[in-house]
Amino acid sequence: MIELVARLGRTGLRKLEAFGLAGIILMQSLIARPAPTVMFPLVVKQIHFVGVLSLIIIVVSGLFIGMVLGLQGYTILVDYGSEQAVGQMVALSLVRELAPVVTALLFAGRAGSALTAEIGLMKATEQLSSLEMIGVDPLRRIIAPRFWAGFICLPVLATIFSLVGILGGAFVGIDWLGIYEGSFWSNMQNSVDFREDVLNGLIKAVVFGFVVTWIAVFQGYDCVPTSEGISEATTKTVVYASLSVLGLDFILTALMFGDI
Amino acid sequence: MEQFDDVIIDIQKLSFSRGDRAIYKNVDIQIPRGKITAIMGPSGTGKTTLLKLIGGQLRPESGSIFIDGKDIPRLGRRELFEMRARMGMLFQSGALFTDISVFENVAFPLRIHTDLSEEMIRDVVLMKLHAVGLRGARDLMPSELSGGMARRVALARAIALDPDIVMYDEPFTGQDPIAMGVLVNLIRRLNRALGHTSIIVSHDIQETLAIADYIYLISDSEVIARGTPEEMASESSQKVRQFIQGLPDGPVPFHFPAADYQADLLQDS
Image (cartoon, chains in turn brown, green):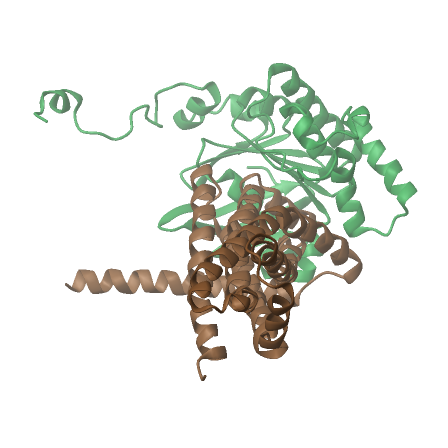
């Protein structure tokens, strides 16, 4: 029994320590960043890497999710004779929930795991040590640009996801199932509020971008520099990031929409 | 034990441990200026750790590491980074940055620490690459190099800023005989030509004995012998002889501690 409590305490302390380390890494890479002239090209390169190269998976997923939403919404709403509300349903579920959450999950799998593996491999091949010996802080040079890139990219990707998803819903609803075009779009315009829906969705995406990238760079920086260590860290990134996104989504939703 | 005329690195009463395992206990090491000093010892004795301690990447539990009178563990961040600009380190794996070309790898420390014009940087990089015989490979990416070539590029990067101290971490490990010969020659030639202090960490006895001016032998977290290669060759201690001559059994046992062989075999599983 005592043994159990002691083990619980030890695990708790270890987790706390890791969390503290993650906090230090976050602070140092955010505060102590290099001169803008050095930083800017590095961030642009990382935006290309984590953002532009994630575009295809985001666009394809957004399109299909939008189309599925249109189809499902139609089959339910047509029973009540209110199929012109499909546009409103597709837009609201995408903008409020699906775009930030699904984008963050895909981002964790596509870009987060790649970030962890890349930083872990740099550690394993002593590139991080060698930067330090040249007199460059790897937190500034390697971690900070990747962090900013992830932070900037996720809201943009989530917005693109929404747009493509709505187009997919419109394609299924209007062109295939024959919903009247005017009521599809006007219903959507009347019900989607900029502050309530679009802005809240964007806030979610910003928070997710922050958390997913933080987990990814920390796991990479902290990993055991062996092949098993890197594979474990990559798995952890995807699992922790996905769980954090889902948990945070519930909290954020409760805060944003809970009082109505 | 001789005293050197001019000591560049003076390590006093250094202690360091990883977890419960003591890596160093009250170790004193002096590195003479302008010479090639080798730190030798069996694998796992923390030779690489020593280089990281000198570079300030690790902090000792107690003791001092003076470089030209400055105590490394007590330097602030900025001073430490300035000090590191005076050191070059050749990592075991080469540690080239894999996302930029050979040329950019060698140019990297110059861009960080100097305000040289692009033309000057080009000249310096080409000179350094020429010194290691790889001027023609400047446009290749690190993934296109063989192991020996990668290590030579890393050497060119380590000497890009004309450092006072160059540290080599296991430079000969995993090299074919030709690459090994090339490296041995390079290390000696560069040391003579540029006049920097070289520290080699290695367990390749023949190659190291051939180029070192002075040798420290480390085992069980202590310095067990020190001297010139000639002194080491005539050392009478069993432990030193076992290492230098590469005998499989001796004071450092061949067998990992285990129960009696016969009893172990007869025991029922």
